[in-house]
Image 1 (cartoon, rainbow, N blue to C red):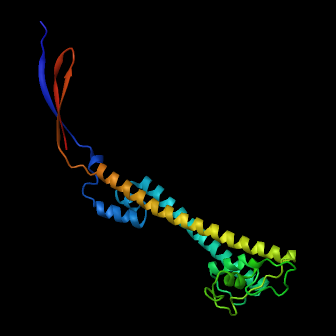
Image 2: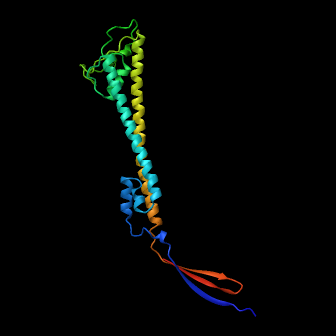
Length: 228
């Protein structure tokens, strides 16, 4: 005859990882992540993930600062170059105006006229042909008057090309700066979402009763698993 013994055992188990953040504020974790990515994770005890978000944000701050400084220096260099080679004394460090200077050889006609001048090389004439006043956008006064010289002179053409390269480098740096700012914003969004996920995962406050059957050659029965 085979004797079967049926008994039960109650196992009380506590998974501390599932409830270690149940007393911590989700709002505070979100706010900290928005201000400094990684701070919310540090608050929740996720130090390795905190470090990852922090160093990414630090790298983006460096990138933003570097590209802004480089772009600003290129714009200042372009302005100084225009003052030196186009006589634009007192020209403002304004990208729109400096770009116009790169599109036209002069404001009101080159001092040394070309033998076959291109009508589009004179800014004032281009405005008049468009039916606009020559001072509609910029006053016709010192600081807004320039002359790169005739296109018959290869040197003046090379100077305009160098000047436009400076403006191009400024625009590229400006785009890189804006991308860095966008990446910083995205890093904060990701940090917030990840902090929310971790808080939810580690803030359990529940009880659960499970019956787990078992059988061996000598015994059979079930365990009662009570977790909280």
